[in-house]
Image (tube, rainbow over all chains, first blue to last red; front, side):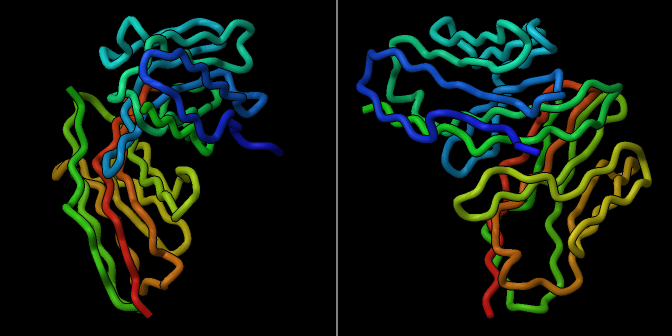
Length: 115
Length: 111
């Protein structure tokens, strides 16, 4: 039973470059979430998918951010024209469908550093 | 909007001490409440949860009771170990949507 996986684990990029992260959820989970965590803070919600449909986006998700889950399996998060303020840990989580209270299982995260 | 407030850290205790980490929330309706833990160098793991008022979640000697009257979900453990050193996050969710996290409490246990 594999958990949530994320790639890459670390990414260093220069300001202005584009980056893309991948998340592979637990196979039977329909829901997939993206969060961002900065040093010393709790994770903040970015967006979530039910199968391939993107159902909610945070106002934190500016126009430079886009997320996809094309076949309802893995998901990608792209950041265009990166800024130093984008430096953070990007977390992916998945959960089964249900009526509420389902546990979200987190991946190890992708740490992004924008120079 | 929904929010979670945790006690300020860091918290440093001696082994076998009693632990309480306070957590209060603001939310409409009836959220589900969670404690997640992040050990050094590892990802977030669910520690325990409660989905309705007066429920008690428990795991690995940790407990928390969902108190709707005080909008609280305080984490307790009777006797902590060095291996409990980690960052603890209180969180809530309404329906099946996003988790809203507190800022985290760093716990260090000295032998």
